[in-house]
Length: 126
Length: 128
Image (cartoon, rainbow over all chains, first blue to last red; front, side):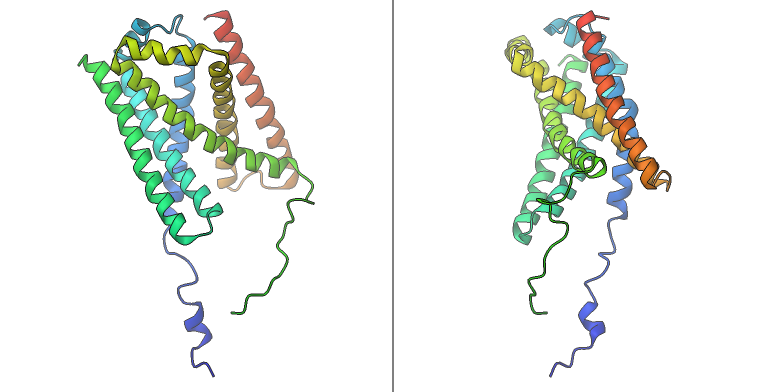
């Protein structure tokens, strides 16, 4: 005979009491990415050549650097949030799921930061 | 609780693909694909920061036919994810959730993302 009540059984199985922030951050970055990604494509398309000097000149314009840093930040933030949901939905094994999410966050943080450092290096002429 | 081997629903292998479900999984697919694009963007920026040799080395792959196919696949994915993302934001506001509106917005998303990709391709070819 089990003495556990049905209430005790369902406790902890309900709401995770978090997730609103994830949802909100995904929407915020999505809204930011609408103008930023359109600017990014337009900016690249409107360049006549894509040789090295043209790329340097492009990155050394203050407005390009500012918008590009914002773009890279929002892009990697949004991508990390989205990939996390994909992993949560399709990876059944709990240990593998947590490991993948941790690895994802590290990789995305590293790659995003690398992109921003690269922009700053060119912009500052280092 | 005893594991009861109940059938799962929907059975994807016998389920007829619908515009709504196809666009939904395409949104995910393009999202994952664009994550790879984000990683490539960082590599491209690093190649500029690294100097002319590494930039030209990477640019050779970008300008090759497979690089161009990949690039336009990313452009299309971005337009699709952006348009369908706006569709999601409208849904989040509680609008356009009935079947008719969902199908209409689905067709708009498909047409717009294809059109924007063609326009971008023309602008690159034409050289603005």
